[in-house]
Length: 116
Ligand SMILES: [Zn+2]
Image (cartoon, rainbow, N blue to C red; front, side, top):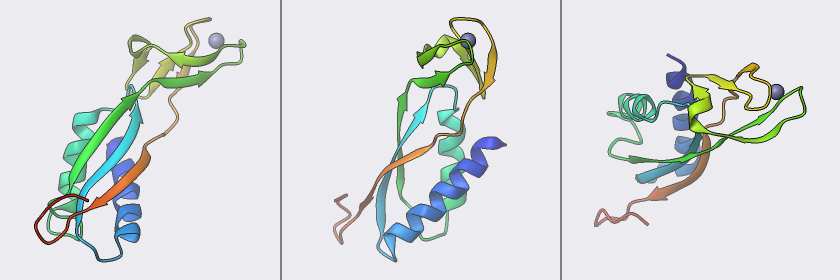
């Protein structure tokens, strides 16, 4: 499962940033085509019982950006994205979607459980 490897890296980065503090929420940005449900499932699976246990994964979907050999460069509609494939809207060539799970913020919880 591809999402699992993306999330494994994400969790490792969050643990580094947290430095032992309790994490309340993790905000990420991911392009269309990445399965948000699978990301969420993998995140909870990987964080259960660990340093990030109880943290909430907050996913913001963004448009996939493609640069094609035909000269097209720009955002691609979600309809043109399937799994890890992106179809060039100009020439129809199929590209492999780049891995782009971007960590936006790690928010920490204080003693009252409020996410800071
Ligand atoms: Zn093209």
